[in-house]
Image (cartoon, rainbow, N blue to C red; front, side, top):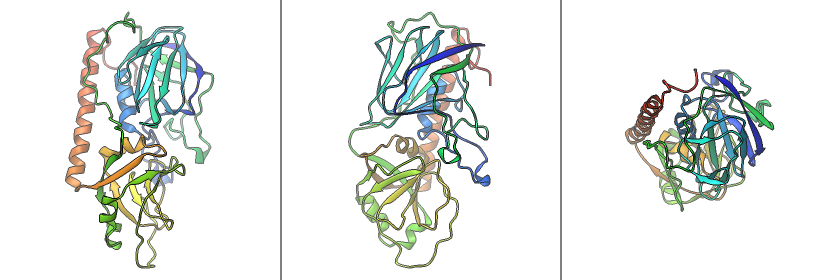
Length: 331
């Protein structure tokens, strides 16, 4: 292992350290947090030989760029973007060698995806809160990047130019961010039974992500119905992806920094396989919801998880063939 410096030439609009979030903290009143698009974050880390939950960089819009002072292995995932190394085009969703003293730059396409994830092979020197680098602005833990980031890395280089054909042919499960409305699978929750017709209304209506959205949840413009009773709903914990109808005429999809219901009805829960796409939904994105049963939701998530495990095995075999045993960092 050696210490490598990453000189931050430019940050994006919101660029922070990130990981897959905290574990077993919600009983203490602290949300899990973590990458909004967990799938893209996990794939980025796997592609550079890191564990899935290693710290990486999450970027929301703009054009981040950095220059390493030693060769590093980098992968950029998330929404569609333009990646350049030394000014030459490089692939996203693929391991890319960035030579010492060479700039890597990521230009996000906010029209098709809100976030990009930049993983670098090694251990990024980031502060942690309750065992995670995931920022939590409400707790004063913002995790903004400084002008220089340090990395402990075991990567020694592959002797491969980014001008040459791709070094790897890996079964990468790329997250597709299509043009037009995005279809989100939803499983019915108990709250739908207290609002007659809400299922049918949500199934046939378009919803648009608004600028009022934040790390707690997506606020959507679109038609809603409210309970026809004034019976108070006891506030309680809710899963990630819960569809909540507040007193205002909007629909909220709660994210990884959600807390309690605040007494609002929960009419459905987005399937786990749809959560990565929700993590890429920025202002102006149109969403369409389709109701599925629990079995379908579980099956589609299992397929997504299976694809990640296949990628982990293929990446480990590729690195092993190049002389690296297991992951490139110790964990």
